[in-house]
Image 1 (cartoon, rainbow, N blue to C red):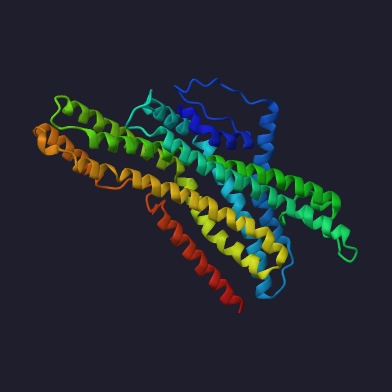
Image 2: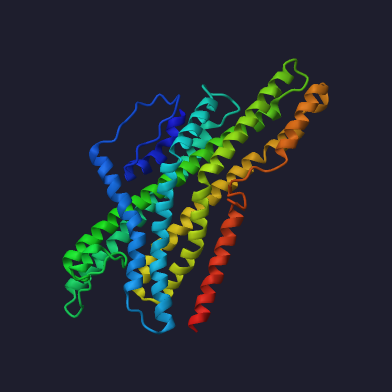
Length: 396
């Protein structure tokens, strides 16, 4: 089992988005160049994904909103909830492209640290199965959410065509303005087909980059957890009375310093993704719940999958952040309960230095002020519910 085996699901997201898979030194992977068709498909998906944010704002500004406060808030909720998904997808795509060199550099460092053969202190199979199971279930959900979201307009259209008393509305996935609305009726069949196709491509690109960004973060946290666990096991089995104990402890301190350096690089890469996901999700969860309650039954079915998507990928990020912190917290007790009292003065001094550096928990943070943890996830849900009750009170 090699490091590249852990990258299966992050590469799957890259392939769905038609982004070139990551390459790093020591991976021994053949360089694969993108074909012209793949490059054009990526550009088409990226343009549609970024444009949909603008199209939603233009459609909202051009719409003739009723004077009632309830109708205005319902329309704002419907527009902003869809925009939340597109903004998260666009921010993830920007992060994957902008930090590509940094990501490949971290992958190269992890390749150097990856154990060359099976060692007792490394639980490679355990962490591989754990991370693969988590990403596999998440992939199933995201692909189901994509198919569900894009099938609803077709189901609604078929129902309107089969029902004699029903008026055909030709409503796409979201109310997005496109340039062809200037010379085609917005509710015509041709305009519906073009809008539906553009939004299907946009949502596929958004789902793919969200999967790739989250799975890449899961990959990094899994590798760091594996190394922290191996370092803690190595400290617990280190015998201070051994003649080579000092040299072994020096190697572990250097190993720990490299892990701390990689942790800082990971934080720097994912800072923007954490910020955009948390800030957007907090508001979007509230607005989607409000749209489900205030608009109609069809909106409730449509936005239920969006609400679940935000809940799933936020808990995915926060769960990995919590597991990362718990793995780093193993180092302090492992060093403290070592038989340091049997070592010489230099050994005890080095171990004290290691303990001092391990006192602070290693936490993934959003620009050094919001920890990525399950506690943050619960606080985010609490704030979303407070916003939801505030909007409900305004309507009443």
